[in-house]
Length: 161
Length: 208
Image (cartoon, rainbow over all chains, first blue to last red; front, side, top):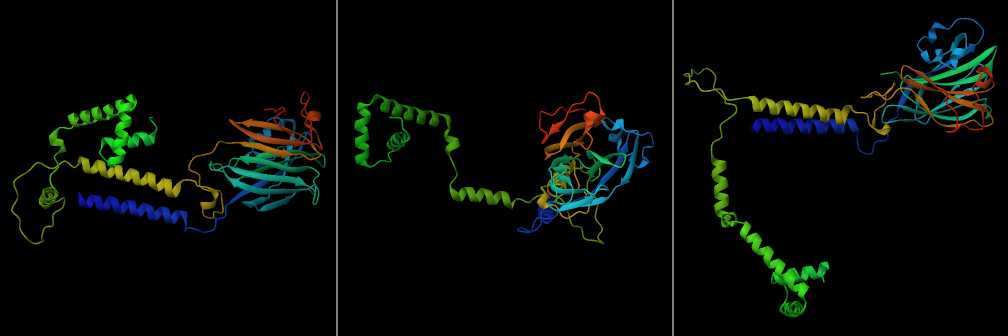
């Protein structure tokens, strides 16, 4: 019984030590948190054509209101790595910039993000959008005219668990 | 008359803890105050009940020396060892067969301890914590429980643009769509009239 108690005490001490290591030293600066993501830049058109097979993994683009488009081309899908409160900028083919700022990773593991789409030095399109997304789930901003179609911008962070 | 300080004073009077002058003054008050008298009677009654409830044997506490002697006697009793060291190379006569002691309580206790350790390990090490306490990670943080799928718009400032908010539903998840003209969705979709100058708020009709 004494050995049993000693083992129990030892285990508890080990757990507390592990907890202390996991939480880091007192007074240490807050660790940075980052998340990888991508910006899908899609040119959609009502003209008959193909749906880019690289968009097969984005089934929401086949739903209303996107189902009005009969063709979609993935122009590019720049990767981003967002760090909390640090802006990342992606340039669109029409010259506007998508500015992304990760504001928070919630306790549920979702991403609170702030974004804007404007021409450099202007507030001419989308001054600010605050959105919460789950890992791997996109938010879309659509409506910019480009060439003979419409730009659909999809932004997703992380990966679905 | 029933204020706390008066109650304390009455209790002290009842316990003979007041000075003689204070006690005499209070005694005179009690004689002229039926409520005080009733409370004093209540204290007496309560003491009687307590004395009746506690049998004399319960009140008999062994003297200090006797108590310590009893404890030492119990500590001095040999305890059956859980493990026994046996010298190697010696031949032991087989002991008479004895019923094997039940190990079930030990295993139950061990299993409980392991489960508690696992729970504590998860709580302290593996569970998601606030953003400031998780080490650097090049990718998304480890999340023990999957969050609700989808995306939601919390706030939007359209400036001078005109826009609408949609919710696209797919496989139970809803994804936020912000449509800002250049091309207005009402131009593209007959029956949809969500044109909103400036900002979009809760009054926006959302299409799912």
